[in-house]
Length: 427
Image (cartoon, rainbow, N blue to C red; front, side, top):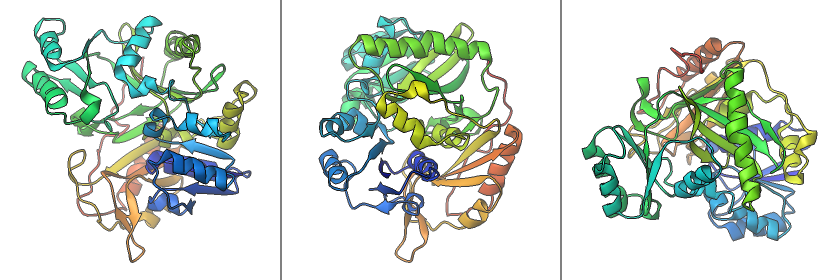
């Protein structure tokens, strides 16, 4: 089978890696310049943001399946465009992608379908937002979310009134996030333990993935600014069975039922970002694709053929397929460039990649890399590498991942030292 994978980060490298293990895959094409992805794919000279050109390529080359990694093309309607041209594509429609593309839509959807989430208010302008912050509706800390996609920079947990008002000013008046900050969701801050719960779904049936936990803050101890994710873990027993049953009963099934009832059956990957509170699991956010870096640890545990799973989803036959998952644990440490998630330099040579991958059960997924003119691998993004390890226990997986990290070097590299450590069991 000829496959096109759209996207250029660590999640997409993990998808390519997993798909390439299928005996039915003949060629994987990619418009990415990611050095790790290019080692396993056929390079395509296309602008990945030009959806029409991507569809033209898929039609011309008789691509049998297109897999979409990131959220932006889904929100822009890539699946609708491909489907209208009779092209097989994995992912939700533009209507369904609103669950991630608009925080306002997602919160109102949850309210309509009684899906547990934080208490919230919507602000259409800065005056309203400031009034909400000042009228006593919420105590501090308070969470402020830009309505639209903002590359992981659209959520601020404001500890003080001054920080909250500065965020409103930055988002709505200074337009630091562009159109994404035109509307805001202001909501109470939930407390508990975070978890990521993802399912494959064809709109009717669904198949759960192993639970994962990611680490959003830039610094150890969950300090510093939010990022796209500085690491992740996945292990058997990460969720108590009773908690998982509540997640399925109170969140996953009502979400899929609600989507069908509102006329946009959800097909692809539904990601539920959760806070496990004393009152039970509550939704922090929906994503409409695999998480990053959750995909890296989840796919490392997949024993089944990913292509079979995805194909079953696209045919509406997921009920006939049940994925098998390893009983081993996985860990991912994200190695980032100096300054990330703020401004950072690129073009730094990376050494030690081969030595890291020589360690047993270590796979390095490239997130922000490129080939230099001399053929060397260089940094090209904020999150540069995803170092993953799979071992019998979570402690062993974490230790092996950090052992691999120690073999890698580039100027200014930084990473959290506490991924998967000092854990309390999730309720």
